[in-house]
Length: 324
Image 1 (spheres, rainbow, N blue to C red):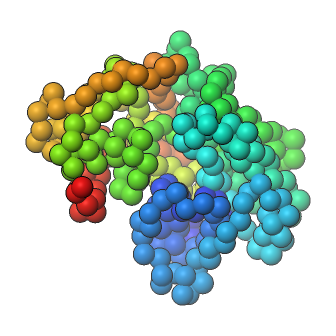
Image 2: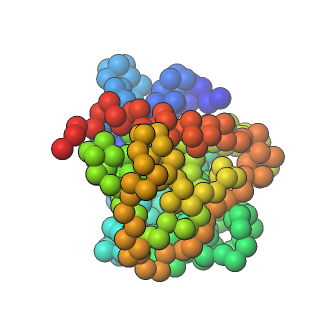
Image 3: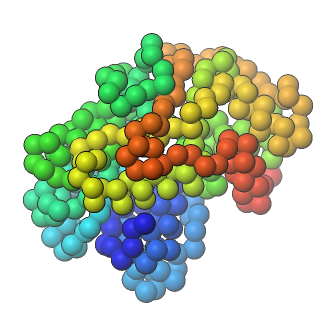
């Protein structure tokens, strides 16, 4: 448990960041959240924390090193959860240079600011299982080479290595998370298979699969993800995990088509109520991770089954999505 700490969360309006901030505030921490663009709707009402100055939101582009330096000079951060990134694959493909500037050089700016002005900070960088790229062996393990080939995957792989290099070269306390696909209440990226499918069904439309549906993927419910972040941050008091990258997965990969069928069942729809376009090119066939190291090092394992998580997620969207 992390309590009574001053914590920086980058990308504070993101889906995962909002859930993380909600947890941190609930445990009497003070959070400084920074953002550049608001990609997400507001998931939680934090007005009471803002009024008490337990939550302070600042608009800062992580590409602006001067602003970050001033931030680290002003606040004596105990932790930094670095979640800010261009995280959409399609967006990254359309603007690779911006993706590299934000995801790689923005990360360097944060690490440099920490190194120079808060060398005792505990720095958690959010990488991705996508950094592994295509692998003949599965599940992914932390010692597998990083082989991200499209702009988003490559940017995460580069920043992942850079973050861990600061632990080795400068004795900065850094850990890296590599989560599989994250889902749950509040994600409004409709290009993702779970929220996109649910939105289609609420609007009485057939869900569309861009792939052929046979690819294996791994999914984690947001509550398990946040517990992973918190346990990792708490575990960083033990120097044994400094400089490590840690996978977080369910251990139960599922094909995209079978995932859609589970959501159809929740909505009492026919198991054939979908459209397969099969138009995706150059997509990695199968991607999923083990979580042995997370279990050994920080006593983490997923608690919420896919079926339970999908029911909770569908219920949240059903109350909030307006039918077209």
